Image (tube, rainbow, N blue to C red; front, side, top):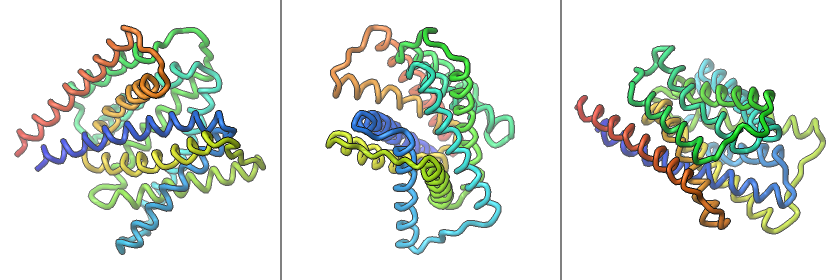
Length: 295
């Protein structure tokens, strides 16, 4: 049963990675159509909050959480706002591939957090897989030292710590309960926070072109599915494995650019893709063997 749950969780994370990648790709289309990062960030948390609220109400599931868990979820929602802003700020200061690469330290940070706090056992194969996958991702993104801005590096580093913290702590909030409750609190908190920022700035830029609107609607739909599924996956296989398999997201984005935008892939990028996939396959097989040994 545990091995089956492991397989289902990994399959879910693969789908989540694809949805996150499509959400980010379509966000770029929305930006070219006149939207900006603030309007996309504000709207992308609203949809999952509404979906979860309706779903819980229709299925007669409790919406309110115990006070302690509710407060923790609200704090995690605020952390989500902060790391989202930090990541967007780092992208303004750094080349996008470099900002993304630094941000993708979050799987390693998540593993160290859950291990240091005694929430999950630190498996050597997961650490090795994360390091190898990160090295492969460096090749995929084609990162160089050009355009290095230390403040941007610092922002991306803090953003990685932020997502790692949300990923690790959310598992403790969810426990054996319904992950949709905690996700609802986080998404609602992030929505309110971004709305306040938007009201303060006095500007909410929507797309002005048809492709921009397709991108704007599409990024919100894919992000809603990805966010909800992400925390369901954490409840199934834990934060360390969920974040580890999130390394697939940049690969999917690269493949989408190759297929949809007619961008080319050089040999080093192909090698990097093979390294990332190989590392994740090794981690998945090790996890399934461990699950079978417990049954």
